[in-house]
Length: 252
Image 1 (cartoon, rainbow, N blue to C red):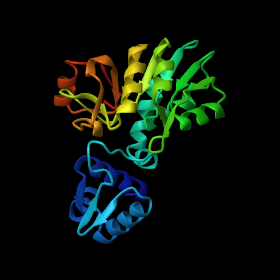
Image 2 (tube, rainbow, N blue to C red; image 1 turned 90 degrees about the horizontal axis):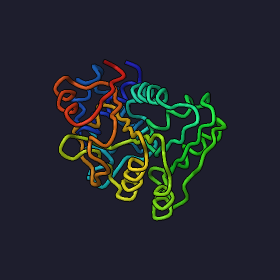
Image 3 (cartoon, helix red, strand yellow; image 1 turned 180 degrees about the horizontal axis):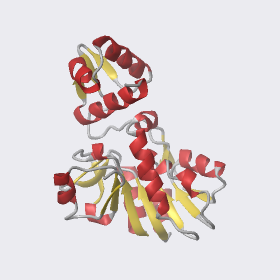
């Protein structure tokens, strides 16, 4: 197994369990203890996890905390690419769309360059820069910049969005389930997501299946408020979620 794939598996397992033993990771990756130890050292140097005796723990340990952009970009990269590519096909010429700061949402941008007369509204500094690289007409919402997600938030962002009509809005998510809906750690970002959904004709949440069953501090929407685009769900989970929302799986 190549190093990048092992690192993805380690980070995915941490995202689910918060604390993982070396023994479990050896079994998960079918590799040696010495290899896993080297992997953990490399990931710790990148500030993506914390090594502890006999294993490692997630840097994020509460409902309020969230991964840095660099950590989120490491997770499920191939799944995110497929989700983003499908989501981009839904966008038509002459539309006004909203893209939030989700790393899966960001992967949509290269696929938008061929759209005619597209206007993108975003609260993500990183997205704004990439959209400019592709010469896509963009409005970046001004507000307080969050260092973790490189997203702008606050009253000025909310006020501007509340006056917009959006054809489509695309959101990332930190966790979702039937009981708690779509959730994210920060209430200010949650408010932006909620407004974008409310102001759009069609709303979408982009998430790989690892986010299912996770709950963060702030709920921004019920499942019914947005079309879920994901990679693959178990049959039981799919049947359960289908009672509440439309689902598209890009890897069935």
